[in-house]
Length: 381
Image (tube, one colour):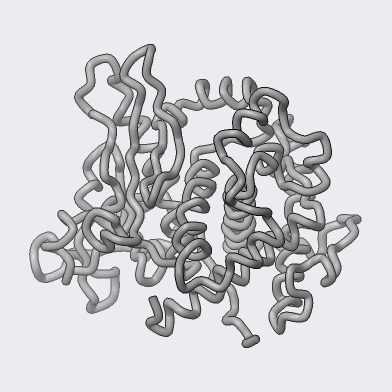
């Protein structure tokens, strides 16, 4: 075993050149009007000034490097991401997130004039996903143009008639998202009909990308992670269609809260993995955001029983204590945020409980992510 590098963080609050706070989704500073752009190389939002060459930009009060704006900036996607100036003639001038799209909704579809608005919401969630994946050090490449063998791509679709239903899901690197999920009212009706405690666009993206990384990192010829996966999550060779049919006909197993992070996770080992992957991303992004705002839980009046190191997948791992600290900070943070949500009469911020078995699964995913990131940083595929 070797000591893994510390978890990289994703900042979610930044400062404009005028001193005003700016945020991940902003395209312009609301105080001074300065153009803003997100640089994936640095993982931060920057204030921009025109460069010498027309159509290129540099960070304010610097001499470079130069950037160009994503081609989707002036579309309903409202993308505020940048490309290095050296890539201005590549990828149709689409940023790291937008170039992952294979299909987008028809923006000129008369029966669905809100397609542009819904697409914009979907893209905002996807940019949050991709920014976190890049900071985590995971491989992110377009299946269409960058890595035709192992990359990912997105179909952002909408049902066209009463007899058609677009299913959100993953298939061999292709992630399909039903853009109707961006309609808050429709998504809430589905959430209630499915008896789900949580259903969001970013949650869909994190779950489906979990399926992609299972195939990319676990179920691949040179992976040593499959035996550990089967020990924790079960045998993925179980008939998926039969498991899904049984779940819909009989409901989830009665003891699922003791073993799984959600009822849906109990359907099949693949879904257990994808649900745990999504929750790992929830944890990392939320803890990073709290840190960005300086929100500390050390001084909060919270009574809780912390997890001990024996709950982890590999308690003897040199980095086990670091993950355990992260896990317990997350637990305290969710207690605080759930209390604040209730004070506002809202649903719980995090309506889940983490059983010990799930903690071991989360630690397994953490070790896989950190090992993959270390390999990517060293130039290994």
